[in-house]
Image (cartoon, rainbow, N blue to C red; front, side):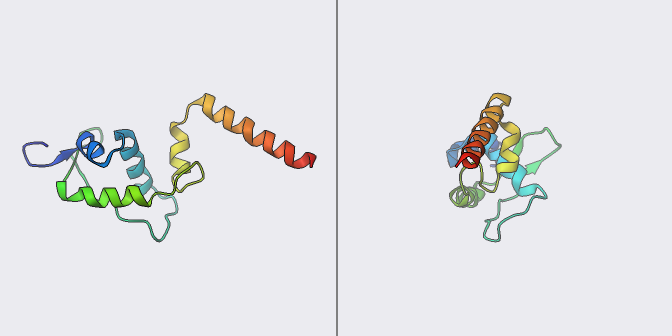
Length: 110
């Protein structure tokens, strides 16, 4: 907690039991122009002085973030797939492409 009683991203992530990278990904998706499901819960606003500055949340925001965490559909075809793929390594992306190509080839041979 900082002097104003606010929580940093690392403190929030710790309390929600996710990484700061995951927390950042959730907000990238939430703030993006990508289509959102109607039942998507609200993510609380955070304070940030400038783009690369630390982010701060109110302690009362933790339950909203936990609700969002519990709501998230999982897997590469979940709602955040388009955001998450940007953080995948080239090796992982290539393996995924190979796997999809193999499935397509198998489907065509049947």
